[in-house]
Length: 239
Image 1 (spheres, rainbow, N blue to C red):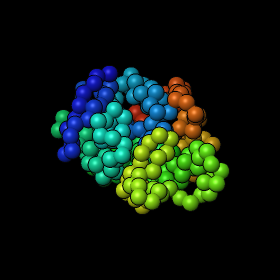
Image 2 (cartoon, rainbow, N blue to C red):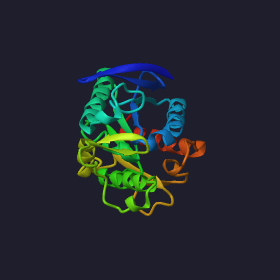
Image 3 (cartoon, one colour):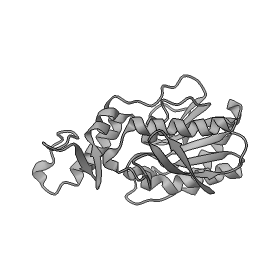
C-alpha cells in the first residue's frame, strides 16, 4: 500500500494505491456518510486481495469525504464526480485502463466518468440514499413529536440538515434526488448483490450487509469473493 495525492480543479486529495504499477487499475469508492466507516476495512480487504491477484487499485478521498480538508457542510456531488474524473485521467495518462468498484451509494460517483468498466455492489440511487438518511434522522430524534416522516429538509433559516453528526447541505440533497447510477448497457457494467437480495443482479454473493452494522466490521471471505469476481470480470473485459 502506498499513500499519494491527486489534484482536481478544486484542490488536492489523498489516495491509497495498492498492487502493481502496470496493468488495469480499479478505483474503489466508499459509500457516503456512516456506511463509509462501516465498509472501509472491508473495501481495503478487497483491494489487498486484488493486489495478490495482480490487479492494481486506488482508494481516493473525495472533496468533503474521508480526511478531506473540505467540510461535509460544503459537500457537492458535482465536485466529487469531477474529482473522480481527475483520478481516471491519472490512470489513463499512465497508459492503463480504469475500472470502477462502487459500493452502495458510491455507485453514483462514477456515472460521469469514461471507464473501461463498472462493478457495483448493491448500488443505491440518490433517492434511496435520502430515504436511508431520513430513517436515521427520525430514529435519532429525542422528541417523539418530531418522529413524523416529513422528509429530509433543513429547518427554516438553515441550509443543511444534521444526520448522525453530519451537516449535509440542502444543495447536496437536491443533487441526489434525481441521481441514478450509470445505466447498465452491457457486460462491462456488472452488478453484484447479496444472495439474500431479491433484486436482479449479474452475480449473487454470500456475505454480511456490513453497511447495516452498527459498528465498522469486515467479512474476509466475502471480500475475497468480491475481489475474485472483480479480477475475473476485468480479465474478461480485456484487462
